[in-house]
Length: 80
Image (cartoon, rainbow, N blue to C red):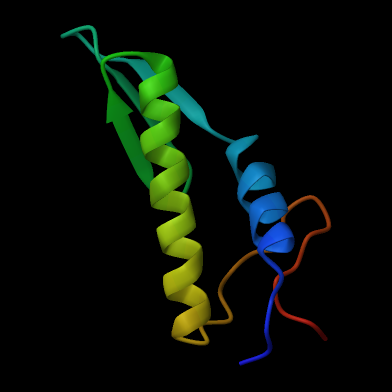
């Protein structure tokens, strides 16, 4: 697998976070999702959980050489 810079993965992660959907649950917790999800007592905590999940999802996809990672805002983790 080609080596990717940490900066590119961070940019990709941040770009994907821009598409987050948040929902306040009946118990007062927050739910945050894109292709993965996170939750927490506050919206900030839900976003932090989501960021961690997104990073793990990206790294797993890269490790598995899975080509299903979408291009987000022009960022593509697979060189052509």
